[in-house]
Image (cartoon, one colour):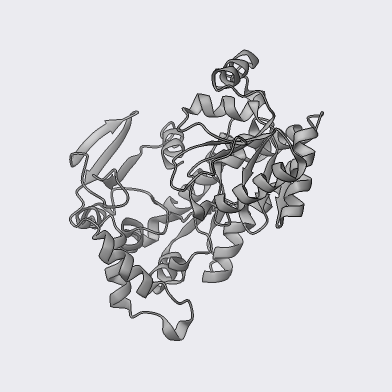
Length: 380
């Protein structure tokens, strides 16, 4: 998301990106060479990670630091700071660069609140800072370090109204300049080369030997994403109705997938293959309770397919309520009703509502306007 937004902003602004030399977000091992380069016409400066994450020790420390939310059992600040260093990527040279060059830039954008460069770096340029936190209700956000981060930021950009409401209530930041903006999402109405043709969809289905109607899951196949509940609901649905529908999965496999003729795993798909899979499906299923935005839901809505999501996620429920292009479910019975509808639907009413929602809320014009207004406000 950050890359797409900054590429767009570079058409009207002089952009410099400061980042680490890491590619692996688990260990933060250095991969790219440090120094300055240019990518897609944007100046990029990489800084070495001076301490890789000690994964086993970090996991133990996380259990200690994040085990409680109540104020009277909060960990001491020095322990939070150690956790933040290990959370990484620990790039002290990046922080030093911010100190030296704070007067060379009109504004500093910090993407995601959760990592060391934002949590430590923002304080060096607080008066020129715009924080894009991508926040949701998770244990780290209750740490003292992050409370200070939100309160120090000059302005904020949230991805959804739900994130905005949650963070403002938690940190008391309602009076700060802020906008809701995310990124551009393609829709069927764009009619560009990225939208697969009907012949592409037929070829995709034939190539994967899919002839039945199917529900689709995209993304990391991980218990944290609610896949266990999804598997349980879908297999019960098939068993009770003696149905031939499929659940088709694509993405990084980090959990066991049930051995069933009704569940098909396709592995990794390219972006174009993913769009083709969406157009061949009846709906997307995402029962993940922890989502700060969900690009996959918006991509599906933009391509005219409905979604079935969990009502436990305020963000996912918000997308469904505002678009009226899907179902937010909290039980198997609600899932069954939703699946019955999308698998039997002969009209495109939900699809049209989804496309309209994406067009009205996720255009480059809206995103660019939000960023430029805040940047102008800081620099004026």
